Length: 53
Length: 384
Image (cartoon, rainbow over all chains, first blue to last red; front, side, top):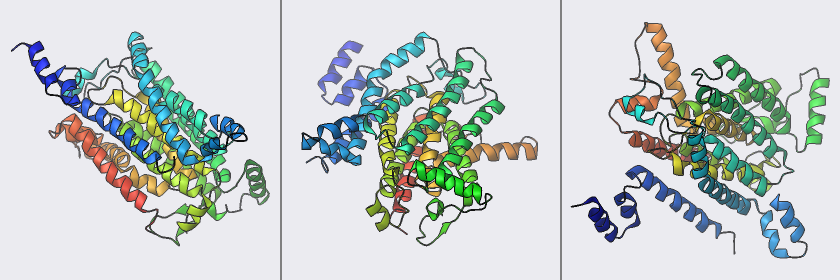
């Protein structure tokens, strides 16, 4: 199976992290850690609703 | 800066009063610093690569690290710039503690910058000599310690000068007010009076020690920055508590007017650190270098002194402490036994790497330990 076809199949699998890994853009730790950072920011944004009302 | 603007606008539009809240400004400072570091990160990395500012790797270190040679370093400048802009935008610029912490942070950053620059640009492997590095660290650390000895117990700079003059007139005998005592965690009635010289000595070691401890920890991708973010955020909570008369009284802490504004600084540090981690996570696109490690370590130490949480910093920064102790023990044992080692390699993270842990396993496990230590440190807010 060609690498391009394999990548297309992985993209078809849906989850964003699989797409990041499948396209060989990121290695596993960096993609996990970037998703954690995004989550932390969303949590912070959620917590700000305690005050911003 | 924006606080002044918001206060001016709030005269006509009441909605702008919301910016008076430290908590909101802290969240905004965090997001601002994160956005700046994420947006400017690729540009900074490209520039560092173009100038060939690449890290040299120790040849006696783990073999897996040899592939890291040439990765751009001095990325700590990204943390410093993002943090500075966010702090200047969102904090009260009339606050003396914010300026004190910024001066110490950038003073140590300048030392790290010169060291890194000589190493990677001038290709001088020794960089700044250990003696001159320690001299400049001591000079800034001592100046900060003397200032804080009188600034922490005094509610304003005018009172600071008054307190200093009283101390001089007493023939250097007068004790500091009990706000400057060393707080012992978990004991509500125990606070150790340090006196002026005790305060200065302790503060000096906390600032210089933390700075060097973070620098020693900065040996694996993401290992130093994430614990810094966690410890910095926790110190921000302490700053908020001691800077708020109601919470300080309720939780039995000394009330230190103005310390609350450091929450904004700590939040900016956390945001800038997370933005840097985006590029520093394994496999790193950029390293922090001494410019980042020395400065953020000094920043943590200075905030801990102002909030009177030196012992809690020691607990929460347990990973930094363990890394430093591993180097000290290794060197002492090596010299005493004529060549034997306690650890496979020092600092401690290399010991685990050579024991078979992967780099990312060491890093994330050290993060988990720091999370637990930070929670334990935060529990001292209430458990007294």
